[in-house]
Length: 266
Image 1 (cartoon, rainbow, N blue to C red):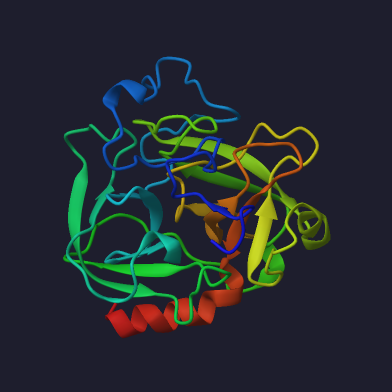
Image 2: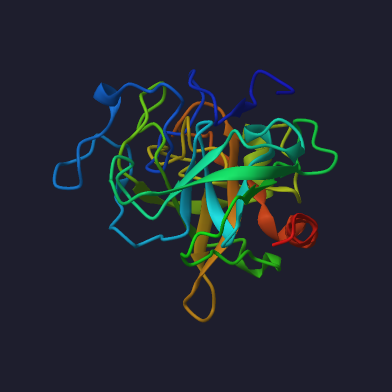
């Protein structure tokens, strides 16, 4: 964290996501989890995701989200991991919307590759190699900035309000693109070109929150298929007016991410 304004969305303190997509923090109490899809979830701007709606979504045991880049590699945020190298401490959970579902697929990590040169500002991406492939659809990444506009979808198991507890069920929401100039007025330390912003500037109310870090921001491409355009990174508080969420701009790092996956042996 370079400044007090930059609050990474992994934190369990105030300064996570308050939208509709998040992931369980280590030790989060069951009593803090949202009710099942049959009940109205206490989420700002979000609704429950249907089983199989986003099959590439992954929850990571350190309290972050991610997406299947390949069947054996998860794309997440650099600030969710501690450097690069051999690492068998992370468990990836996939294939469910309910983290308590007995049908959840759980696979341990073997290696981690944090973005080369990551120092807390920009370059907020990382890859986690899994011990075995997960036989689920993957989420393609944008390789051009053509999709870095419009309305985006975010999803995860993180907090439903600023400072709140994590969720048991996968939630989803839509957030609109915020241009760099407008976002720069909210965050002077925005790394334009490496980061992309989204949220309701005037009203707030929809955003990612604590425990959502590393999860994908995505939209449909010209063929109607989902494509990842962002990685949940940071922001000030959750769903505050004038304070959009900040996401790693995936298209800018597409080549580096591919090279990293090749290095891990995807």
